[in-house]
Image 1 (tube, one colour):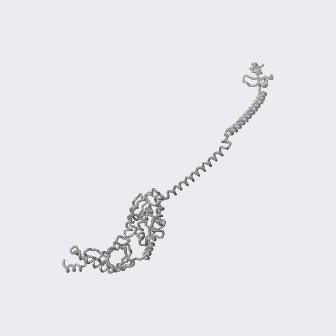
Image 2 (cartoon, helix red, strand yellow):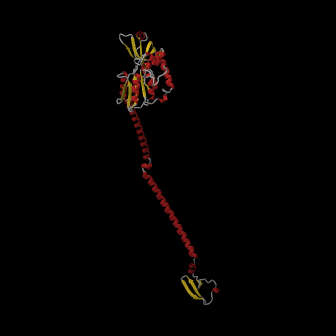
Image 3 (cartoon, one colour):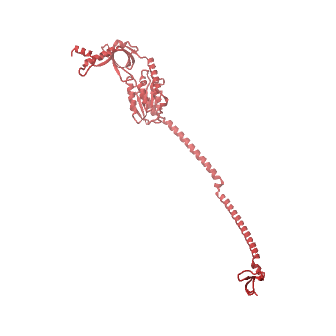
Length: 411
């Protein structure tokens, strides 16, 4: 297509399926839009720094520390060398640059004209602002922090390869509890790849059901060296962990934001090795003390019960139980004699009463009268004759005397 055709296509307000734009037209439009952006100030972290011999151009990549995004940057050697202090890989810088689009490669880059390294004071101020924002969200709340397990099944360790921090954690933990098990994930602990590697290792250990606690450890360093452990993405990743996380970064004065979000903050990696596992010798000593206390308690209880048993056995009722039986036997004998006497007296009194009654009955009975010589005359109908007029001559009569009856007839 000719130049005039391209110009006509560019002049058209849009493309259609019938009249699509050529690739070069799209590239030209993108280049025009980017050119209209003008010069910009960009902040990022320097990576992939390259100074090729024999050229006056310095190549580097400017990375966003909070996202996996980067842009290539080129600049004149003099512009790069004029920066104070000197720029190295990992430096945080503010770049004055003009975006440039290369249609042939379809790539975007920045052409830098000035570098301003971000000073420590500015970094600390930004960390304080980030700390306040995250704290307001509740990421540092004390009530959400979890207690470390007394004896973890496996300790996850995120640290640099063959680092002093790794050695300090392992040696101190194994000195306290020789059987402790570790799941170690070696990562970069400074530089542009530190944050994604630490987050990846953290998520890997979080997914392991055997890991009961995770330690993130690094030795001391400058504020710039420890910046990865104040990264917002890492802080949020630790906040999202269900497994307790221990922060052991730098020395006592070093306080990256990781220290605030972690469940336990240790002053040094050595301190972390002591905090994640109990001390075997100390626990054995405690067991010995507990065993002694238990023995004293049991012995004291047995002694008290023995004293109570001895006192109980010394009582007469247990020392000579037959005494009570003898006493009760005497009581029974006394009651039996008393009952026998009472019954005898009652019988004697009843016999005497009966004799008196019999004597009275005998004295009052008709037989006694007959025994004294009297007779009872009765008619045939057994009626007693009390008057001579009660009978007539010839009536049969019964005469009862002491010795029997006599039949007679009235004259």
